[in-house]
Length: 422
Image 1 (cartoon, rainbow, N blue to C red):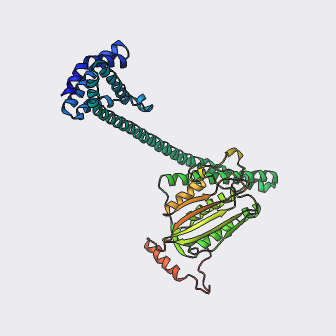
Image 2 (image 1 turned 30 degrees about the vertical axis):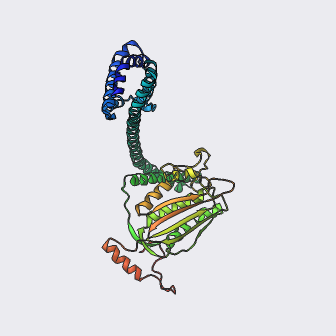
Image 3 (image 1 turned 120 degrees about the horizontal axis):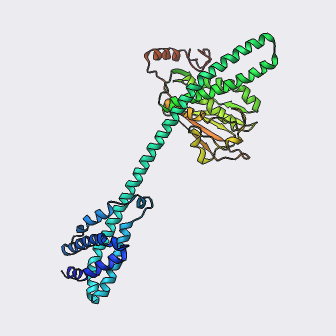
């Protein structure tokens, strides 16, 4: 074949030119020259047979061992090498062959060089993708270990703090009894402050334990029949002093599904909605409004908690459901759990999400953004499965009795004023 003969004719010149141009230092030229001879042999075989696959072995070898630095810096060393080889081949052909011979040679070998470039680019891309995939897997494993370590720390710290806190609480109670007999009102006032601090610290520890339980998938639910309307009435009553102090209007709007007997954990749902409402109270300025509303959906009850507060920026609407996910600068928060922009460990909403998801539901928030002057507000959406049957036979039997005892349309009967059944 004419092209194969022309390749043999320029072989020596080509090897020398490429070796001198691309190998740095005399010591590097000998091993590099051997690699070039192999490449040239493969090229000649490919041209002679018309099959570019003859180049595969040398290309696989060249692209099969990229350095860590090459991968990190996303260098395509072999592709760059082939590009330079193609350029040198053009120069050597033009300088050492007649014009027509040079044109014939370059026209013949160009498809083989194109094949080599495409294959090399694909191999180098695959190597880089594998490297990035392995890096991501390793990073994910590190994050999982870090999250597990953090969860273990929270669990251990919470349980270790509970014992000394109980001792402090006990001694404070004994001191108060002793002071009450002596009539020392000043010390009694100080002990009242200590007791308030103990209660706040106990609430934080309880939250830490709940977070640990949720993280380790150990949250167990005590499913009972309940009315959501009763649950919201209790929440309104429990938060009455706070809303009165802050001049906030907390309104519950009866909706379809609020009077439906459903099967859920009353105490945990109370905790979840309490966290959402206190969060709304914290970020709603005085004289604002918080509204509880909802609707029935196929298989679910959707409850919404809407406030006229300062809102949540889009980038923080997912953060607030993560552990210790606080919005804004912590040093600018006021003290107090229900004061405007009150501080806290950032565990309430993560616990709420864990409780709602344990029920088979979900929670998310909508807001037009954060603005302390315009107060665009926030709207929390909570989906609760509308379960009307109990899986426990004993509870199911009780549940059936309670359904029969539901009030008639004229309201003559009312079996309970509590959120859950007796």
